[in-house]
Image (tube, rainbow over all chains, first blue to last red; front, side, top):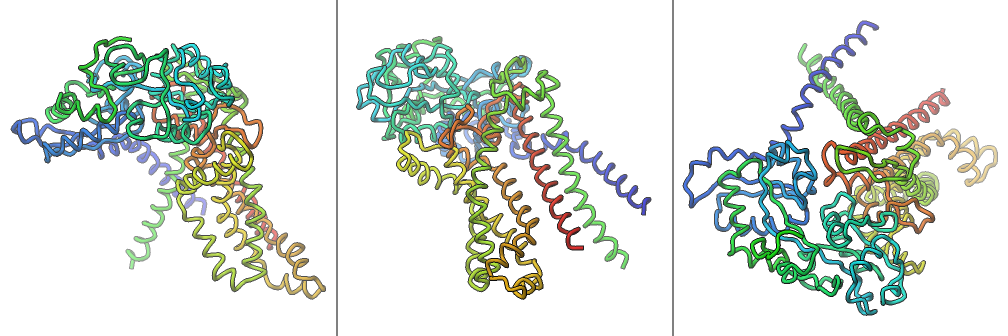
Length: 308
Length: 295
């Protein structure tokens, strides 16, 4: 009896050894399974009919644009298959750095989420500009708040100003609706709209994505939050607020008067292969630029300023 | 012959071993990832469990604060509330199915309860967000409807079927001799139920409650939609707060690989693993006790 137990234990230990050994590379196995990104076979094909696959992952703010561009691109080159996953900027950068995907979408520069050696291997493509706008529940704007100075905005988001009447609005408590601390949208808003001031996490409702944030601001009286302009196309049931008298629009972003914007990055590991490069070129082309603006994203080449 | 006898036995054993090993490997992986918070970034376990200051640095240098007390309290509060709401209903339903109206209960009531168990959590969360949150807002005159109360109610609906079916099975397993003996002593039906049947099924009912609790603890999606994620200790059942699972779900995608925040999130995952381990051993403890009692 004892001997048998021992034998079972030994088998278990041995099996576990192999499992553990297998475990190390299994992570890469599964990830490469959904990448299938080796385009070496397509490199020598003719220019007109590109074929191959492109995989991308990362920023959820950039995903709607990447999807739309992929659809349009697929009409021009039917043999190219493009898969785009969300998952967050950190995840996108990690996966492109590991070679799991061809393109890593990110709201922030690679150096902020990767160590220096990894970031140095990546090539940045600034495909578009995203403008972030403060949004409020319609009753706040009806109550008279159409413009906030930067100081007022900072005071609201740091939790010092607690009632809209303090900034010329209705007598209502301010409800902060924000994004998690690791969000790229939050980082951008904090850096350029709040001049780096830390948001009051202990008084704000965090939402996992901008769509939910929009919904919460729409449903909650006295709510204020922020989203990218791409979420504000069409009738959304929320109102934007001007900062220091400047309306958050693409025009004001292009001419440099509205400060809360950032470049969206598509990173490739080293130079992009032929198919990926064609896709990136397509997104940054003038032809696609119009469509991009309709979706609420800004065209990088129209920026008159490149630094804040 | 040999093949039939040993071949299949081998396959069955291998499958069994695989599952055991998988569990051990997952545990080991969580310990490996989660220990970074303490070993690499030098935080103490007491800081992690007892401090409410949560501000981990999203980089590999560290230097932030990793107090997870807010999330632990948030998880405990929502689960306790869910249990408080669900347990009486579940126990009542279980007694109804097994003792009061067996025919109607088994034919109609139990299948209905089981349908509940199959509804995905995202549906519960969504319904909670569109129905429950505005409801709380109007009924209690709150500016924000997202709250521990909303999360507790959503979780209560989710764990209700688990507790009900496990308890009903436990009550049905009480031998009829017990009931007959009680009736023989002149007990009424109600006296039989609460003096004899329910105490006899006690350990099974507790197992059901713990199973439900384990499910409530692990739920992230539905809770995240209605709890109004605020990084602050709750002060009332109308407070917005966060739980262990919602914080992991909302931060993991964007946190930097190998950074202090990611390590702290892994430590929270490890904590959840340990909590479910505790729940499982509690269930075993109670069911062993029952077997001893049967002897």
